[in-house]
Length: 141
Image (cartoon, rainbow, N blue to C red; front, side):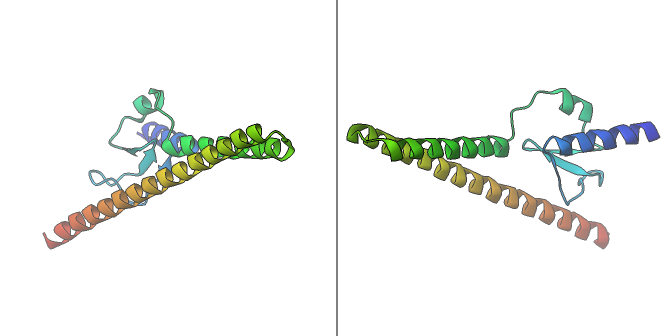
């Protein structure tokens, strides 16, 4: 039994190290720890963590967003430096248009991140309401 608990603890900590997030609310089924990992809520007790760790999952949206932000930012820097030294007006126009596209990418990623954060807040608010309702029902029994 202690080995099973140690293995679950190790699995949960591995998920957190890989970018998972411990949620403040317990599992509504068993009261266990819930980790949000790559868009999924995973209970340390109810879910088979060994299968989750072995399954190759898509990168989390936040990882993709961060990579896109970094890439677009570095491309903006590179393009701005090229634009500063460019004397050909036609090439300046193309570089300026490219800068605008990179800025559009940053703007779209920021909007995507904002929508994702709002959805996460709504999910957490819903989980809190569910837990509160469940607790109220249990205390009235």
